Image (cartoon, rainbow, N blue to C red; front, side, top):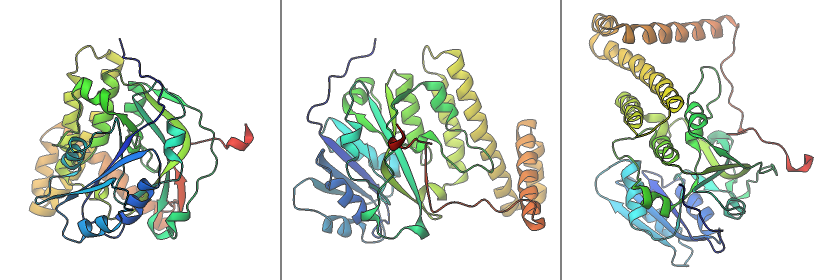
Length: 343
C-alpha cells in the first residue's frame, strides 16, 4: 500500500550537483538553482577536478548561505558524488542538476503545482553546445503540462534507443525526488555505475511503488556536448549497466511483463557492450583475437555482425548520398509537447 504524500505547501529543495572539470559551465548551473525560491540548499560535490571547479563554484555564491561545496580528493564517479551530496543535505526534496546544465526560471513552481507524487519530472530542452549563447536568457515555449504517471514497463521501454533516431531516453529525466521515499525504501545511487545511474535508481524506485509524475512543460536546460561525461563512457560501463538490469530482475514480486521489459533492455545494452568490446579487442590485439571473441558464442556473434553491418551501411549510404548524416537541431525537447496556447 503506497504511502500518501500530503500536499506540498512550502517545498524545500536541495539541488545536488556532481561536478568534474566543470569550471567553464558550473556558474550558470549554480546561478540558475539559487534563483529559484523553492531551493533551500545547493550542494556541489567536486569529484577530484583537475581544474578550478571548486573555486569557480564558490565564487558563484549569492550570499544567501544556501551554497556548500564538497571537494573529493579521488575521483569516485557521479553516483558516489550524488550520494555524498544527499547525505550532506537535509531538505525534504532532492533535485539533481548536472554541472553543465541549468534550470529555467519557475521550474519548481510548476513541478510542485500538484501533489500525490514521489518523483516529479518535466521536459528537457536539449541545446547543442555550439548553438548556446546567452543561457541566462533562454526560455522554453509555453507547453501544456499534460501530467501523467510512468509505469514500470513504459519507463524501461523508454530507455531503449533506436538507430538513426535522436536519443530521448526517459532515463535522461531529472526529477525532483522525495527524500522520505528514498529513506523509506533504502534507495541510493548505485556507486558501481558510471553510466545509467539515473536509469537504475528510477527503475528501482518505480519497482518499489514510486509514483513518477511527468509534465510536458519545460524547466530544465541541457547542453549537448560531444565531450560530456555521459558521452565518454568506457566499454565496461555498458557491461555494468546490463548487469544492473539483471539485479533489477531479482526484485521480489516483479510482474512478468516488467521482467520481459527488463530483459529487452538488458539485451539491448549487452549487445552494445559486445560490439564495443569486439572493436576494443580488434584495436588492441588484432582482427584474429577479435574474431575469436565474436565466434566464441552466438550471443556475441549476432549483435557484432548486425552492429558492424549497420555501421558499414551507414557509411556507404552517406558516401553515396542515399542517406545524410543525422542532423541534430540547435534546440529540441526530450518529450513531444503541445503548446499551451492551443488549449
